[in-house]
Length: 393
Image (cartoon, rainbow, N blue to C red; front, side, top):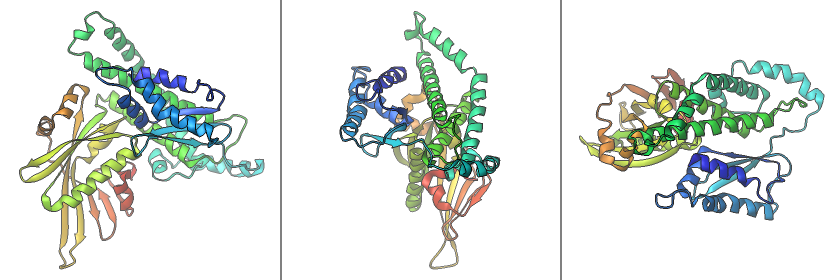
């Protein structure tokens, strides 16, 4: 399905009215998942895909063109999943503000030196659009490129494709795992190529640039961050997907919901897919199970396993009031997707999970957040609760 969608999307910019536009189409993972959901059914297969592209992508673009409501020249055409049942299309100009040659030349060396203490997580927390940040992201991408070339992905994909071509493949009990691997290889390759093209459009050998659109740099940093995490997961034989269970007592329900909101905010930031699997009550505690999917999802979320405490001084005494939520994270392999359709079996899958230690303490009085697992502390608790917990420290 992913390959069919990629072919159809390549045709999009060749349509009349689009082929002469200097636009680079970049589909977020969330947008790809949206089109796959709308364009595939068990009964019709991929036949509704073209209609989904027409309705959710080309129709809004056509309206934009007719109304001349788009910028001129080179543009990044960024497509992501909207808040409603739609796609969000955004234009971003890759060009920097006009500066004189001398204005660019004087601080250029200084900017490049500033990239040394930077890392991807710092940029994902706060991005200013500087050359220093671009240099840092590019260095990280080159490391990713080398790791990708050194990996066995190309050979493994060829083996999987050969296996799919065997006569008895569709009767094989392992066919779902093979198809899932091929889908992953295709997605990774497509995302890597998109990232590479973004760099190519930003790098002009005839120009010296100091300023970039911060949203583009943050987008690049996120792509490199997630692809690197995903490749590490693949090489460590970790699944990409995760099931996450939120457990709490009735009295801690508000804090439990706050944790749920935090993980959904994280998924939205990272362009992950998040779905509720089911909920219930066990041993006097409420629980809700969620499925998160996307590049490196489990590798990032596995560090959340354990207790997350909310601490605040009582208004009636000197005692510290605590609310406690336990997070369990399950590595979801493609062979276990059937659990997503059976909440009771999904719950039982967590039975062997270790109890876990305290992962994070949230002090509501000082607005301090301390992460015991990853060894960081911040006075900006709001950023953590808004889904930036994976890039703090």
